[in-house]
Image (spheres, rainbow, N blue to C red):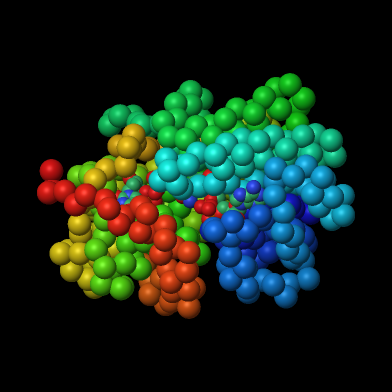
Length: 342
Ligand code: NAD
Ligand code: TYD
């Protein structure tokens, strides 16, 4: 494992993982293969752009010849697949791209990995594949998938394909299922960067429904370390959950966020809920911990550190919020009904 194809490496977690690999493994080479959708951003990789161990290729994981060419040309032995359409609200608006990239794209990569006899194919997945988790229980890796949004259904489909390639072809695969990531370079459609930047701009924070939904907000660096451990110490054909193992209500996340920004709670605005909104995700992360991994941040520490990064890095998010994002925000929130606190 030495020559990595990091698909979706210009996105949020992929870029953080590229930084992680280059700083923790001096002998590794990294090729980022990214379509550069609205979520891809070369600013996320600016500080590794001169590293001789790093190459950027623009390409679509649904394009088999382009994927094969990248593998051949760069002697790739490992694929880590971050490439995906990732936002639940966009998947509700239009699921098309989700099926293409998250299902068909995954299949194209698996076929390429099989054809070239790669050492490892690692799939980046999500806790959302388990669906809504009732209080008092947490998801373990052997649980059935029960996705409820077009996003999570497309990710679950990808996972099932990956596992089928292990069972059928003995393709050396591993999967990690991460909880909600937060940290540097997250596109501000996701709740934490959206709310921090809105708060900094003095705009309302649109909390869906009652805000009592629960998420496990983990520091992206802890997730990257978890992926590294699963890659190097995980067993082939296995799934590993990655998160803090402790979830918080969205309203608590907002309270911590506003406190760190120093903005007033009056910015909170309850708005019409997301259709099919999963109330709670909860991961049991004992399996990865048994390999020696341990997250360094709980949810509160992750939220506070993330807020500080956005305060210190306006250069990164201001151009995004002033660009295409404005149309998206208008579409998603412009006519959304404000509701009384239920
Ligand atoms: P992101 O939306 O920030 O980035 C996705 C990247 O994939 C972008 O750079 C985009 O240009 C690229 N991409 C999209 N379609 C592509 C295609 N067809 N071919 C090549 N590149 C393409 O996403 P993220 O938050 O960094 O998520 C990365 C992965 O982690 C995804 O697979 C996602 O499902 C998973 N995940 C995300 C979270 C989270 O909280 N963000 C949690 C768990 C798992
Ligand atoms: P999000 O960041 O979209 O991640 P996911 O839905 O994949 O977990 O949302 C996290 C939580 O925040 C989720 O419960 C939905 C909620 N949320 C809001 O309340 N308002 C918003 O504007 C957004 C984008 C999300």
